[in-house]
Image (cartoon, rainbow, N blue to C red; front, side):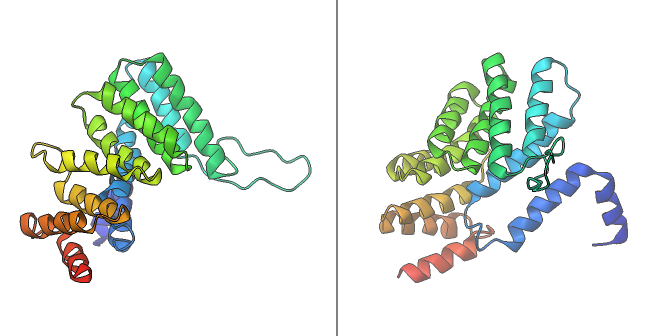
Length: 240
């Protein structure tokens, strides 16, 4: 990267965060096999960033921004020194930070249930619950975001989060139905090739090899230039 470009990134915090996400995706593409984890990460980091940085016009956005900042708080292990206290703005564990963020996000949902901010809070609530292993609660939060979000981007992204939660609960048939519906929507703002890769992954977990093969084949046939195409071809070759 040129020095001028590096300087530009340093001046633009959003670009720095977005570039970090892109680097992680590129570096760990083999492990980040599907789009769901990536979308959730980008949703929490990038879309949340817009909410935090925009000038809050009302208390709802201010509350959401504060709740989001908790999810970004540093983790500092608890000191073993006698009388030591936790540094302000830090948490000793990811679980403790998650629980604090959940409580703050739930306050936004309860205070502004019928607003766009409330829908955003539901989405982030689901993502945070999922990140600390509370899949049943995460699934409910994502379902609530879908029901309240209408045609918003948050509602679409919540469907991917819901799939991840359903898969964690081994409710594969429910997850497959959501993904099948998404893969048929040509007007969706979600990347259909990524949705198909997730569909194939869940089908394989469910033991539905034929359905998984069909999803991989759609990626190869319909999205030959996709970044997932080579992975789909590899998977097809290993499946026989």
